Image (tube, rainbow over all chains, first blue to last red; front, side):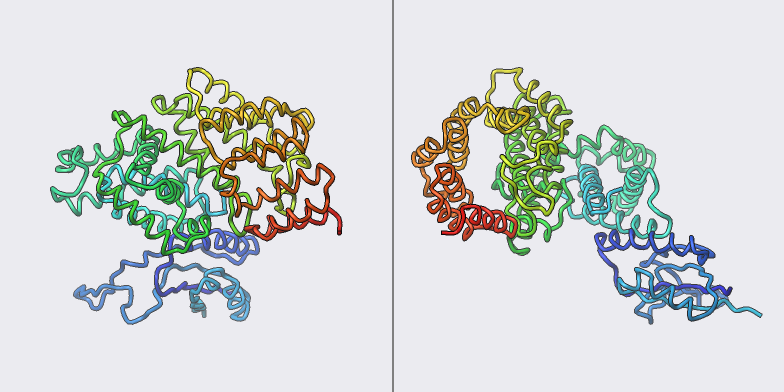
Amino acid sequence: MSQFVFLYREAGTPSPNELEARMAKCLVWFKDLEQKGHLAYYGHPLNRTDGRVVRDTKGTVTDGPYAETKDIVIGFSVVEAKDFDQAVKLAAACPLVEAGCLIEVRPVLQL
Amino acid sequence: METDGSFYRRERARLLAALTRVFGVGNLSLAEDVVQETLAKAFEVWSWQGVPEHHSALLMTSAKNRALDVFRRERTPRRFAPALQHLLESEWTLRPAVEELFLPPALQDDELRMMFSCCHPHLAEEAQVALVLNMLCGFGVEEIARIYLASNAAIEKRIGRGKMVLRESQRLFELTAEDFAPRLSAVHRALYLLFSEGYHGAGEEAVVRPELCREAMRLVRLLVDHAPAATSATHALAALMYLGAARLPGRTDEVGDLTVLVEQDRSLWDRRLIAEGLALLERSATGSEMSEYHLEAAIAGMHGSASCFEETRWGDIVGLYDMLLKVRPSPVVALNRAMAVAQAEGPAKGLEAIAAIAGVERLAAYPFYAAAVGELELGCGRREIARAHFQKALGLARNAAERRFLARRVEDCGFP
């Protein structure tokens, strides 16, 4: 088994109605991953309107999240899968994707 | 937790009532923004962690913290409720003042005061009901437009104007004010309309909308539990809702189509609601007041306590309709009376009663007028005439369920 970090990305902010609708689906999806032993770490949702980017050792910061990307990281989890293919399949079933989010799947670097 | 969106609606209304009091009704849109932010944040966090057990309390705490932030950020002397102003000026008094504003008894009052505020005399009844739906039941513009078969723009305008009147009133309605009594009857009317909308809804998708009935019952319950609002008419209104709601499961069959009262499976009626309704009806009889709600509740009580169709005391029901007609002269009430007459004295007498209805032409577009005539003609054995009336009713039907119901009645008359 390998570990993959899922970075959930989204452009724009959904309405509370939409967030409520996707919440129920997310919970089902997370539960399913967990029961099948694929969830190494639930992770967290991230504040999508606030963030800082540290640019140098003097502590120069710019407001983030990365202003140059449209799709802000809105959360992350750590998933276990036997290979990249399986990880991608798991991500594709995520209700957030159905809702228009992107998932960046990044393998944890291992020796 | 409900998953049909009613959770969000309910919480939205509760938070909005609280924050509107805290910020002052003049800052209604600020309150709305804070509610949206609070809910959006909660739904995101809970998407990962699951919905905690005490979610309502957590939401209220989160709203309170946001309110504190707002006060700290914008501590300018102009904006907030005047009674609070001096408390908000120092951090010492700010937190306890805000804490107190969020104590549970205050929260229930908020919803009541919001309800009374929405029934402002400057607003037409339909605007009052639209505001209640939006502010107290948490329905969005689109949902309300669907309920009224109106365009989003029309409803947005209606609600927008309502909110403007609310903001201009500067503060939420005082429950002890001297204009309490007339405002209470406007509240009764709005809740009655809300319930009827759910019970006889002319919506395109469904003929009954139990969620509207539930909301009306929740709000009437607030009145019943709040002494000055718990008048005899309030109890009667609550009774008629409980007795009506008890029969909701029988009003449609398993595919959501209408059933006639004769065919209704009375075992589906909710015995607990009937018992509660009858108890409320009894409590409503304490004074000398005899409102239209008393009469309607009494009629519903007659139906609710009859164990089968044949056992219904139709003669008494006719008498109650006679009284109701005096309080609320309306051709629809007269039509219902005529149907009761038909049960008590036979279909021919029913037809006579229909012919005698004053202003019957106002029923021309109402499908159940033609259907009622059809029903009675069929009862007299005149199948062909009955068929023609059902056919006419079918042409006027407002939704698929009504159409299916009436098409079935046309068929029941046999083919000419």
